[in-house]
Length: 265
Image (tube, rainbow, N blue to C red; front, side, top):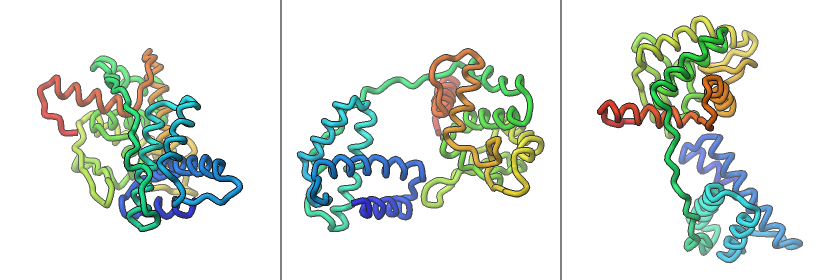
C-alpha cells in the first residue's frame, strides 16, 4: 500500500509543485491510515481496493475517540480524499470510498492581530540584544511584516532572490511562478546590514549555501527555527499569546486596511 502513497507523493511534487513540508504531512496522514487499516485486516495483507466507506467512517471515529482536534481530523480526511481521487483517476480502484464522507466543521477563529505599537516594539527588540543573530532576526521580522510573505516563503529565500539595487525580493512559487515585492526603506536597510555584517559570520567556508537566512550551525533556517525566533522576541516584549508568522501577515493586512489601502497580499 505504501508504494501507491509514494507514487501519489511523486505526482504531487512533480505535477503540483507541492513543498516538502506539505508532502511530509500527506505521507504521515496516509501512513497513519495504512497502520489503522493493516491492523483491522490482520493477518490478511491489506489493499486499497478493499477500503470501503464504512472503513473510512470507522477510522474517523477512531480519531475522534483518541481526542484529535477537528482541524487535524479535517486535514487527515482531506488527505485521504485527495489520495483516493488520485487512485480512481489512475484506474487503481473502481469506487472512491470518500465521495460522500463529510469533513468536520471547524469553527473559525478571528486571527490574532498585533497593534502598530506592538509591531514597532517587536521590530526594535533585536537591536537591544545585539550581535550577528540580532542582525539576522531584525531582517527576518522586517520581511515578515512589511512583505506579508509566508513562513515557507521566507525560509526558502536564497541570497540571489534579493536585489538591493532595485530594492526588491523575489519569491518563487509553485510551478516556477514568481512574485517580486518592493522593499520599504527599513526592511531594505535591515537586509543590507544582515548581508554585509551578519550572514558572512553564519556561513561556513567549508559548507557554502545559497540560503538567505542561516541558523547558528551554518545551515538554512527551518520553519521550526523561525517559530522559535518569533516566540523569543514576542515573549521579550511581553506578548504571552502564541504568535505565528501569519500573525504578522494578518496584522499588516489590517493596518493597510485601516490606512485605506487596497488589500493586495
